[in-house]
Length: 99
Image (cartoon, rainbow, N blue to C red; front, side, top):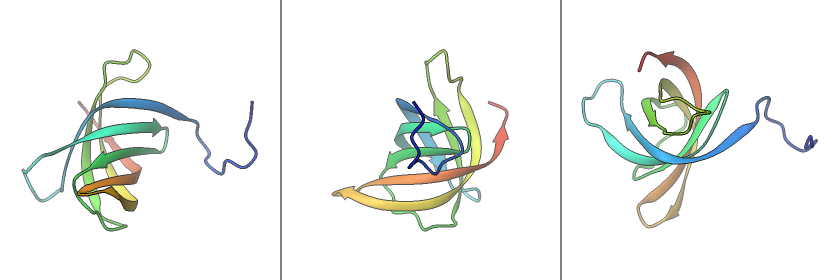
């Protein structure tokens, strides 16, 4: 059923899988957990407070047949602390890269 209050243009798929992310100018890779993914964005948990507008390169390693592994360039939309040093980060996909 269609939710009229939903402002997103794409449905989100609930997904819990490993994710890695890095800053474009760095080789240091950080680990996180993907919470959901849509046609336009990725929502994940990680150990960094990321500022809106920051660029990241994400690699989503899913074993779900509906969502193949994905490597994408994203822009941080928002980041909020959920507990201790754990943050939830919403991103918008800006480009897809070959895996």
